[in-house]
Image (cartoon, rainbow over all chains, first blue to last red; front, top):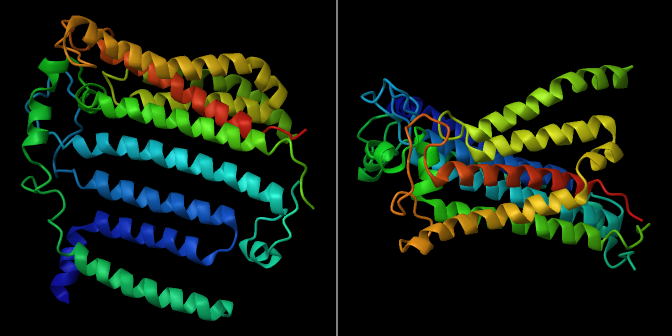
Length: 127
Length: 100
Length: 141
């Protein structure tokens, strides 16, 4: 038990990413408003980006940008940062399309509460 | 089932999942050591030869826009498709009346 | 009262935010930032203007034809600049193999195709943000 806590204190960014991921997952599962579920999905994606970008760090290294006089210093790994740029763009696209679908849902049912939509059944009122 | 029973069952499942994931995090390589398996010969090549093969000072930009420019091109196409989908979905429901 | 303070402060601060966004786009290969972050900053300055002053004034500043041109031609610009490599006989989207002059490192026109592609992607991301905002705020007829 003692060495488990010691190993977890060394890897503190991954523990922080896990806590944020679980907060997002609990928000998706327990709230019944559709907007809050969408915010929970966004929180989960932020936790994943934190974990990936933190895995490329080296203690005592500097940012991977050259200026005239530091070509011999220790640079951190630039590859996970460059790969997560694509992930951020995908997250923005999914959130935008989900918001458009929520707008359509509101205009069709009149409410955004998922429990009341499940009780309404087949009384959809669009033309 | 009722709401409090459902929330309690979700809490129990999430606690078991958290304990399992904490055991897995203890097995990962330690954070920030220079001899992790993440830093292999790919990143060494990108750091050492970025200036003379591309001529820019920012290493992340030279990876995103020169070594892997093909992925960035498809990603701009993904953004274009997302905007197209949103405009079609919203404008198609502007003509209908609002229910109830 | 709240409206009065917001309008006066926004009329001073928002042009500087827009110029800062263009600075991050143009210096993407010298200092941290790049095309995606700079494009979002420029887009957010137009969205803030349209939130504070009303939708009609926002639409008059960026009419729909300008947004459609910026969006479509921004995506096409990337593919056309990649064809420079094929014309000279090297693979698609090649930078140094196609014989383009690199320039001195640290200058604004170094890097060959990288700075041109970065400007195109930056304008495109700004136009995406503004188009999404104006589409969701439309009233139904």
